[in-house]
Image 1: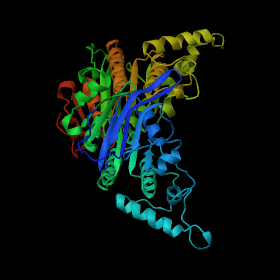
Image 2: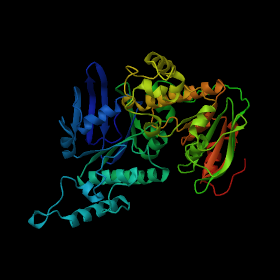
Image 3: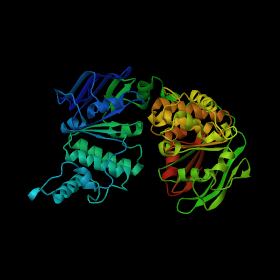
Image 4: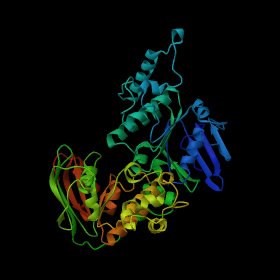
Length: 506
């Protein structure tokens, strides 16, 4: 294992750690070495062992083998309380705060300072919380309830809690998945300030641009084992992808040749005051149209309006040359539209239903005979799509909420592909899933276009847009500001259209 650039005693070190759950081996040889004053990226596909390694650090799991040292001393945490007592804090993607309590009450929960007569010293709590927020360079009212705060602010509160506990090791597990660009910038500023104070940070992310922007060192895992550790300055995206999945980055966007056919979807002058204005575009059979732009540009709102979920005041939508009534998703489905939403867990799946039921939700009317649905028909329909999409699950009656993010996305895709759509709208199709599964989703979209389906793909990942789209549309503040053919769509041109005050030349 290649060591970090400094030779000082590591703040935390795991070496050849093993962890099994019955016959399933989650970690074969997990290794990670952290140093004070650095930010260390931990990357790998879903199932690579990252989460298991983090849970051992957090005291949720105990290792079956290998070494775990904290500042050179062997440790073996039996609980999360032991981990916290030893200066370790884990900041998860979705913070778990008490919504009815104030910010300061959440920070000091269970360890409130007391003053005379044993009464809680709220002034001392407020003063310390304010001092921490000032150090972090953020402005949050300590007395406001946490209910209603953004995910970004909730994560800052979790960080403030860790600082109040004097945590020297912080693990940030996919902290940016639900954040806007501005919120990510603020979080990174906070992370850098913690590094500059001499703390050791672990940053887990599927986003390579964030890894290169924030981190000093990177550790790659694959199949439950450590692959390599190296300084960020000495590696590339190609190197990391190759180590993560065992194949070149050129395979990430398997764009197949497809014949562009007739116009299938035509949107003209779509307007909803305060949300989007005068949006017009077309999508043809066999074409993948990428809809790019910054978070909050109005892309998802346009897609939902086209499908009939969200309202619009002016404009028209035509499918196959015929007008589509607005505000009627059932009519859109009947005309061959399908919408894979951005939030698959809240809008795409019923998490406590089995895979079978989720895949067949949109076609239950077709499966019914005399008002009844035979289990065998439902199972066969689900089996076809689960097999075609290579959904990895022990059984089709497994609850969908227990699947990995990538497999949940495949189930949502299967649900809508079962409707045999003419137009497939996919909103952030690979958000939060690992590199290998991203390649599988990209390959599927390319195959669907080759079969003649018209695809509108919304994505915040510029490489995904440039790698998959035949045409790129760009939105900014609710308006279309650019349209580029595949050969014209460069990162510079797309970003200019997404951020410039004036519409760029096409």
